[in-house]
Image 1 (tube, rainbow, N blue to C red):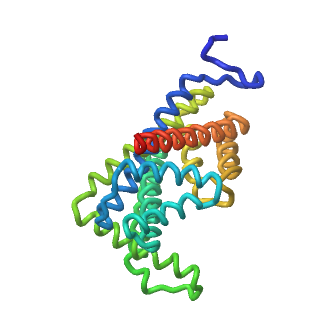
Image 2: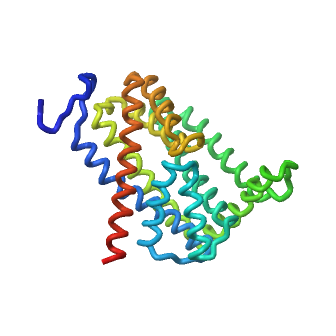
Image 3: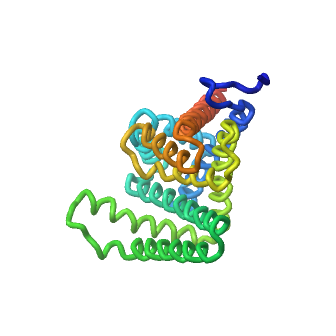
Length: 280
């Protein structure tokens, strides 16, 4: 057995160099995610925050999300309110917009998968559905004030869609569309490469489209928030997805655990490093 390979329980082989590569890429991915949110704050609200400070807060809050459900999100909102005078309502709007743009890129990836796997006819169909979803979402955001559910808590979050539209309109008005697309595309690419490197570490790379499918399942896991850090939910989704492409349920769970651990270490490293820099 080579020195850089390790057999776990005799069932599968872990290639450690790919895990190390995934860890390095994860650090870049976390920084890019923080910069995406910072870009929305600057362009959408006209607030300018020190990059190092925000990246440190972003990394720490990401760690907190793995301990307390939405605890890190609440910490970000509290920090922005105290440091940059950004209201909780504005923060929720930013968070919605952040998620909405991420979902748009994910749907784009789904369209590409259909193009590669099923041909142009399915690609056209999925793309049309994708465009329809985006158009409906924009129409909802523009006319959200005309609707009400009659339930205060639900209406509270529903009305935040209007803020999302205002933020998006402000970004587009400033001619920042290419900057926005470039930043989110780069972030999505690095994030996928983190997962792809982890898959290589477990020899799950023969079926590239299958890996993409598992990655989509991993990306969609954030829609279901029942536990701190989505522990259990993410593992179940990846286990089932991995089994469907023939890699096995256990491999999918292992991918989920190692992906989670890699990002935990990346966030911890960034927080400690920037905390050290701030004190030195």
